[in-house]
Length: 114
Image (cartoon, rainbow, N blue to C red):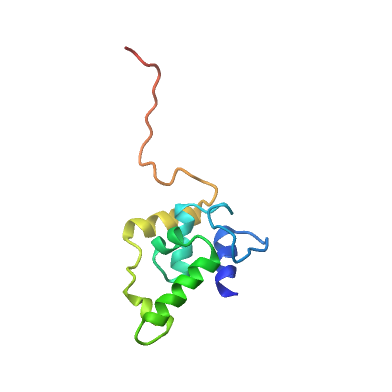
């Protein structure tokens, strides 16, 4: 299934992903959720609300059934990633093992005084 393949690509794994496997339990996080949402052309909030392929697919199918033209093109009203989200995805893709993508500066504390 194409959706599961996208999950494998975003999570960078060769392991089989089942339809009921939770994105976050498999190592997903907010930046990878944005990348998955971009790959699936959906809102990142859908990934958060429906973290398994089965629940996301069921939700998308329900959206299609209730839409007037009954296809995935009807999801075009979903907003694109913001410039900030695009920047965070870009940085994450450049350094996938790095987690300091959202730290604009660093503060060092030497001691606490009361």
